[in-house]
Image 1 (cartoon, helix red, strand yellow):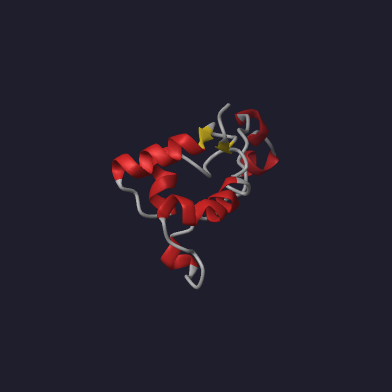
Image 2: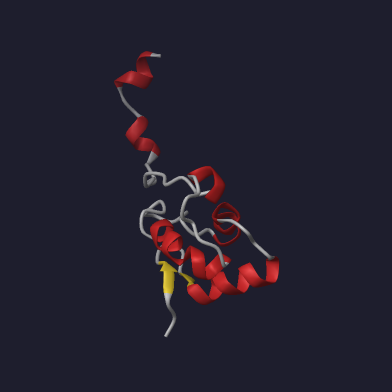
Length: 96
C-alpha cells in the first residue's frame, strides 16, 4: 500500500525517496518543483509539515537549529478556485 505524503498531487514517500536518490536533491524547494509536493489544492498545509517531520530521514541531517531560509521551506499558498468569466460581468466593469 502506498504511503502518501501529498494527497492532492498523489505523491508517495517512495516517489520522494526515489527522486532524491536519483537526482541528488538537497532541499525541499527543489523537491517541490520536481514533484509538485505542496502545489495541490491544500497549498502545502498538510504535506510541507509532513516533509519537515521526514526531513532527517530524507536528507540525512537534522532540521534543528536551521532557519527557514537554510531549509528552503516552500511557501504555503491559499487555495485557488477557478472562476467563471460571467462572474466578472457587472456594474464595476461596465463603468470602466
